[in-house]
Image 1: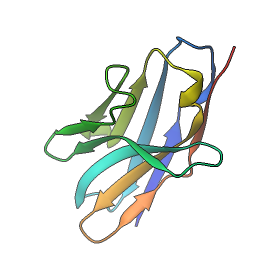
Image 2 (image 1 turned 180 degrees about the vertical axis):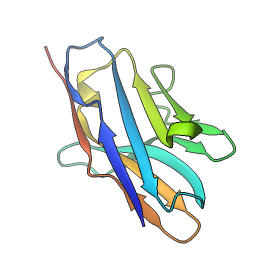
Image 3 (image 1 turned 180 degrees about the horizontal axis):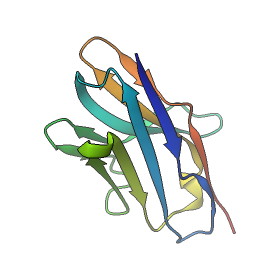
Length: 115
């Protein structure tokens, strides 16, 4: 089992920044990649960014240049730095752990971009 604890969401004005954190614990030795997804009301969940165990990153075109993903192996934590936030970035952001045998999801953290 893998447990994921997300933090860092909140309310921010357009143009502002937030950093999301996702700390993994449990049987984390078989990770393939970790990533962030988001789901806005009435929309499907979509990929935001992923980070492989080898350090390769993938960032969605919609946030490229504004968001970045990084990890701290010592803390088993992955981060999503979000800059120049827009109202359309408003969503629940979910952390995903992709393991060899199965995937795990965090509980989600709300990000609201509004003036």
